[in-house]
Image (cartoon, rainbow, N blue to C red; front, side, top):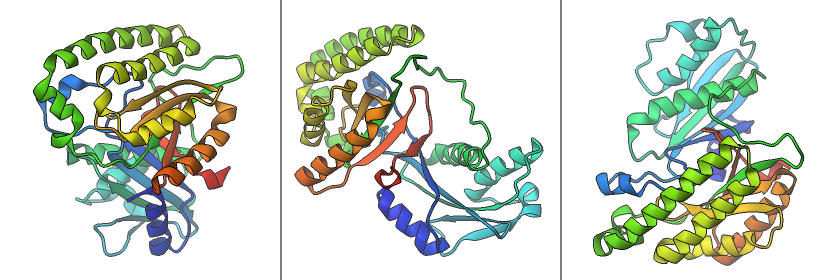
Length: 313
C-alpha cells in the first residue's frame, strides 16, 4: 500500500477526499542507526513501518472509523464518544476525542477517519493510533499541537526542514546485506558503531547549540561513513536519490536510513527549496525505477509527520 492507494480507499468508502494524511513511524533517527538492537532482536524497525491516518470533516455530527479489516465504517454520535465500550482499535482513537471533550473543547463538526498500519510489532499499534488521532484533531480544530521534544530552528532566515523519502525498496530483514555482514564480519560493524557513536554525540551538541550548518555536515559524514565502512548495505535506489540531492545547493545534509535495510533517506534542506526538491526528485526517481517515491516533511524532534502531497503545492 502507498499513500495514493490509501487516498483512493478513503474516497471509495467515505465518498469524498481525505483532507489530510499523517504518519507515525515505528522508528526514526535523525542521525545514527541502532545496530545493536538488530543483534538483540529479529524485529525489523524501519522507517517505512508505522501507522497512517487519513481524516476529513463531515457535516453530520457523526464520527466514523474505518480500517481495511472492516467491511464498512463504524459511526458514533457525539453523545457516545465519552461512554464508549469499544474493544477494537477504535477505542484508542475515541480516547483522543474524550481527552478533548474533558478539556472543554467544543467539537462542532464530525470527522471521518481511516487507519492503516504495517507495524512489525503490533503491540504499539494502539499508541500510534491514539497519538495520530490526537495530532490530527488538534490540527483540524486549529488547536495547538505541542511537543516536549527538542526542535532546532534558527531565528534567522532561511529556515530548514527535513524531507524524508520512502523509496519502497523491499525489506527482508534476515537476508539483508546488514544481516550477512553481521554474520561474516563483526569487526567492520564494531568499527562502524564506534565511529557513528562519535557522530551522534557531536550531533547532540549541534542540536543543543542550534547549529544547523554543523548538523548538516554531520548528517553528510554519517552517510559517507556508511559508504566507506558498510558500502554493500546501501541499495541502488538510494544511490539515485543521493546523486540528485548533491546537485541541490540548498541541501545541508543527506543520508540513508533504515538500520541498514535500505529504502529511506533523510534530507536537511532550506524550507523554500522543498517544493523544487520534491518535484524534481519524484520525477527523476520514477523515471529511473518505475516506482513512485513517497515524501514526508518534519521539523527535528517531530514524532508524527504530515505527508507531503505534491498536488498540494
